[in-house]
Every structure is written in structure tokens, then in C-alpha cells.
Amino acid sequence: MKATLSIVLFFTICSIQAQLATNNGALFFSSANSTSICNGGLLLLSGSFENNGQLTISKNGTLPQLGNLSINAGAVITNNGYLKIEQDLINDGLFSNVQGDVELFGNITQHISSTNGTETTFHNLICSGNGTNANKNKELDNVSASINSTGSVVLNNRVISTNNNNFLVLNPSTTAVMVDQTFGSEGYFQSASDGYFSWFANSNSDYLSPLGVNAAIEIYRPVIFTPNGTDTYNLRLTQGDASLYGFDLSNKNQNICQLNPSFFHEYKSSNGEVADLQFSYLQSADGSWANVAEYQGMYNLVGNDISNTFTYTFVQVPSNNYSASDSVFVLANQGPVAAFQINALDFFAQQIQFLNSSSNATNYSWTFGDGGSSSEYNPFHNYTLEGNFIILLEVTNALGCTDTASVEISSGGNLVVPTIFSPDGDLINEEFEVISPNVDDYHMKVYNRWGTLLFESFNRSLFWNGDTEDGIACTEGTYFYILKMKKGTNELAQDGYITLVRNK
Image (tube, rainbow, N blue to C red):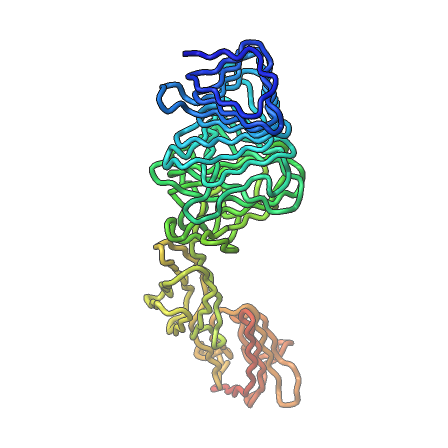
């Protein structure tokens, strides 16, 4: 059955009990105080419809026709009042919605669509209904939609599925998007791989962007962005391992231990303006995450855990840490970083204290290069042999991720200063031979009893043969030496006496 509306000039209360009411070229007008109910659907073939009151288009309970509002190409609808639609909005014409309200109140999935690509711009869009699971969804089918520059979208606890389309909010007010914040009953936007929830923003305020996925496991993980300039900011949440979408989770810097395989956020600004971003997670469902990483060739840490809002934890990315073009952000846990310093407790580094400066680690494994090892945080180690040794520290965190740091040291050895020598030509004990391990600086001076400098050396392998600087053999007797050495930041000064004897 089809009911055709030729002309309706004015009505206060009107109920059309029909399977489909059709406007075929005439004016359909409702006054500001009128209430109208179209039970079964409204088809605008041509002409115009001006709604200034409240019009409800509902499904007929006994007839199979759905409660759609269908606007054919060439038809014009001007909504200045309150328009309630229980099923689909199919807009192929002109839908002027400058100041009116549109409520999608169906309890099953509702669709906003067009067969000729016409996008619908709403003033105030209200989403309501009692459907669960997919019946919460208000779907964009093959067409994008928007809220005008003074309007708002009230999601309540419903879901707007943009699919591969965009839902754009042109009102820069931070209150232009309103959702039910009851935990587990939040409203949100969900998008497929080519779709976004988009918001035109022009202030330094925080914009709470409700993002989620209404799939087998429903999740709500909002984003807060704080723009630094005027632009359209586009966001979406994707559920599942990012590797399934061409972003390999294993392709990460070594300072990242773990990346979230459950979901990731995507962001871009239309004209390249940047914004501070905060990405959320729910610890009870998602585990603990302290950082966020961005994929640009490979994952890099760009943010840190900063705050809790309600039961959601937000990780912040400052605007100077990322590119403003297409970006994929994944929750991350930082890997351990191994680092240590060496403190030599004696001049020749025979006894070493190791000062651990590692971060994000729980276990420590040291090898000292001479067969020794330790699992202490700040161990000590004694070297009994002279040589070069490589110290290796491997650290591990609670997730099993590791990092290493190493350094080579020269350690061990003794200083031997003789007390007597005999430069008499028998090739035995011919020089005042000081034995020392390798040092950075070496300075030896020998004086006679009157303070005359007889010998000076800056080479630990060059020794006094008992002659003066002029090559004259010194007489038997006692002479005085001063020895100074430097190794790293450690300095050693020693003086004493040496006895010169000649057996011939």
C-alpha cells in the first residue's frame, strides 16, 4: 500500500498510518508547534518538505516496510525542527539541516546512505536506542557525513560506524561531541581502514575523541588531542595485531621490549598541523603499558605514561616527537638499558667497584673477563693478573627482554722499585729498573745528595744507568728519586732512596 501526499500546508497533530507515505512533487510543511508521526516510512520523490515541528518516522509494527526517510534526487528537505528516524536515512537530494535536530532512535542497525554519493550535513545529531551489539550501530554506507560549524553529535551509548568513510565535526567546540561516560557503556566512533572520525579544531584545549571497535570483543579506547594550530584532525582505532595491516610489530628499535598486539591508533592532520596526543588503554583488559611508539619505517618510542582518567590510563605524545602526517601509534613497554661505570679502588685497578646505572631492569649478569662473574647490582672484583679485560653486563627486565653494555679495562700488575743496583759491566742489575704496569703518564727523576738532577725519564722503559746527564759515571753512594704516575683520573707519587754500588 502506498499513500501519496500531494499538499500538506499546516498541521498540528498528524498521524499517517501507511506502509509508505510519498511526497510526489508537492509541498510538505509542518509548523513549529506541530507533532507528526509517519508510521511506515517517508519517501520524497520530488518537491520540498519543510519541517519546523517534530516529525517521527517509525517502523510499522504489522507491515514489513521499514521506517526509512528516503530523499530522491531533486527533492529538498529543510529541517528546522526535530526529526526522528527509526530506520535508515537515504539521501540522494538536498537535506538542509542548518538548525534542526535529527535523532536516530532505532533499536537495530541504522544506515546513513546515498545511491549517488550525496553527503548529509547535520546540525544536531542524536543517537539513541536500546539495541545491543551490532544493533547499537549507526552506519555510514558508501558516503561520508558531517556536523555543521555550530552543531553537535550526541552519541549517548551508541556507535557511529564510519566504515571506509569519514564523519567530520566542523564545530571546533570541545563540547561538540558528547558521549555517555559510564564505564562499559560509552558511545564512540569506529572506522575501517580508509575511514576516520575527524574534528576541525582551532584551540589549545583538550579534545576527547571517543574511539572504539564494536566487534567480537567490544573495546572503547579514546584519544585526547590538543591542537597547536587550526586543522582537521583525523583519528581511528583498529583492533588486532598491527602486523595484519602491514605494520610489523617485530620491526622495532632495541629500546622497545614489547608492543601491544591487541589494537593500535592512527592519526593524521589534514594540513600538517601538530597536536599533543594522549592514547588510552585499560589495564585490566590490555595489561600494563608505560609508553607509546610510532611506526615510521620502524617503531620508535615517542611518549610516556602520564595520567589516569576514570579507569583509563592515557599515554602522552608531545607534538615535537612525531610527524603530523599519517602516523600509527602502538602502546609499548620500554626495554631495559644496560649501563655502568668503573671505579678503581687502587692505582693499578686491581680492585674494581662497578657502579650500575642501568634502567628498566630486574636482573643483572656480570662477567669480568678473567673467568669471574656476579649477579649483584653493584659488584666488586679483584684482578690478580695484569692484562686487558672486557667487562660485560647483561640486564633483563620482567618481560624477559635484555640489553648489554661492555667496556675494556687495563688492570692488575705491581709497582717494583729496587733499592740497589750495580752498574759495573757484569750485565747483572746494571740499571735502576723500575717495573710498573702500563700507565698514562710516567715521570722519574734521580738526584744526588746535593739536589742536583742526574737523570729524568718520561718513559717507563727507560732506566738510569748510573751516569750523569753528561755521561760521567756516578760514584757509589745513596741517591734520591721521585716517581710520579697517572692512570685515568688516579695519580701516584712516590719517592725514596736508591743505593748505587760498583763491584769492580
